[in-house]
Image (spheres, helix red, strand yellow):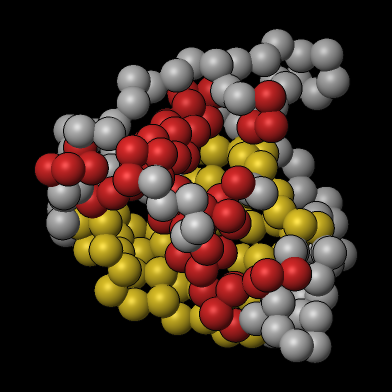
Length: 195
């Protein structure tokens, strides 16, 4: 029987994944691109776990704008969600401008839709880097229920490392070591220390 997801975050990995989001939002602000669908979606994601070996886990409630006419997560919405979340698993591995967020390009995104995922359902998006070389990476991801009993969608995401465009490099913020309130986590359960 599946067990509920229990986060075991690594503080350094959490900061590196948070840095990806900070950088993305800095670019959106600088270019005034607030209408982007991925921007709207990323604001609703809550980071709950990250590991230095290349893993990022997010919590998300399926919004109406990512759903089809039947009120279920649209295939394209699932692809967008998994594209952005799986990419973030590379964050803990990024160094020396290698595998930084804005320097990757999706080569292929292969999704299998296993179950209907209704609007308003809380899900976990769990992404793990299977391989990251100099120029290519493979990340596997799942959209699943918090208790782990239902897997809605699985993905294999192949990324190409191309390096960030110079105009986006100008927008990179300094890494923060304090997470925003909506992204904070506690070490060791309730009442633990916070980043």
